[in-house]
Image (cartoon, rainbow, N blue to C red; front, side):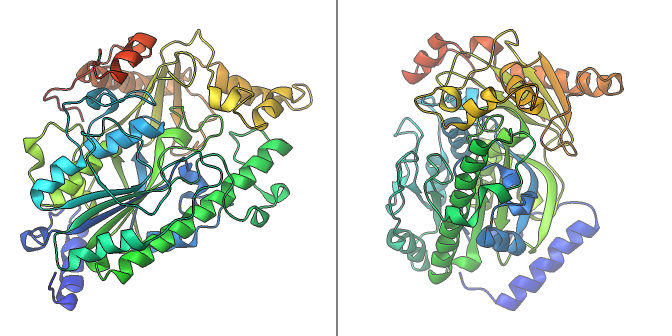
Length: 487
């Protein structure tokens, strides 16, 4: 890209500041939209958003992510629909919610007739590659260029050493060739927590979040998890250094996201904010004013439409669930009124379907089978869990009633929950029976009903062995969005 750098930095800053001062969004200038920016998406694996310092985490050291935030825009209200690896990645790559794209359970398959990021960006002249963890099916729907260098196996012990050579070459080739969209999907801090310097996090010095029972076993595992976060951060630093060395940094939009919450009770595999709330950072040196934060609501389904919009494509020609947040990158307001959450527990345990909705301040959760107990085998089954769950259950309920309450919170859930999530960030105070919030609860409940109807979501009938097995065979029984617009 040939550009007068002074004009680019100053003029664009003036345009953006004007938009901010007027309280309205601006669109990317046409001459810049035609430049075909590169896209670099870095995905962490199972990292609870508020364990990162940029979202208030007081333990982990993440100098590279912190620097990235200072150089770009931090999204305070970014979400994924389902806090499980495969569904959330399918959502990100397709612009469709779980039932729309078909991947509404872990270890299942999207519909064979949908499109994904390569299908949308290649017609715009892009190379679209993926390095690291894949975990989406079927392969012909997710037809990324395979870029080697990072481990694809998130449960390998230890993680394989990584090599930046292929990634550097993929990015640098944009200098004399077509632009790139490259996803680097890391496998940390997914369990097993075996990477990084655990000595940097003495278990006795950790400040545990209030949604985790304070036992020696929990502290030991949390220490290992924090070490993996710092190891992941070092990988982020290497990737960003590789981008700089490619001389493509100034015309590349970088997105970093933490995926869903960690593999602790009440995080991954739940609809609590520590599950479906995600970190999202955007850096684009010539386009985004550094050091800003936004409260605009965005969801993983919005990422593909945004990239297509920036690439010069027409998003209204496709039936996305998501919507472009280019205006938010420009300093504009949220394009959404709500974001939505889904959980289907199969095959990770017995059926336990959940649906939720948030407006960014209040979070309403509906447990569709509240008479059942919640079981998640990776956390609770002896042969594959860590010892911390046993330590929670084994705590003396008279001496440490808080451990018992956290076990109860995890396994026994009421039909409905309502949280003032922007202030009660760990969602420990259920307001569902508080009459002062009755109108808010009713409004969110109705909006959730409307969204489920738009998704052809029958609720608990989705989380059944029959529905999962059909999806694995590409013959999905439920859901298929057709030209529905829900705010």
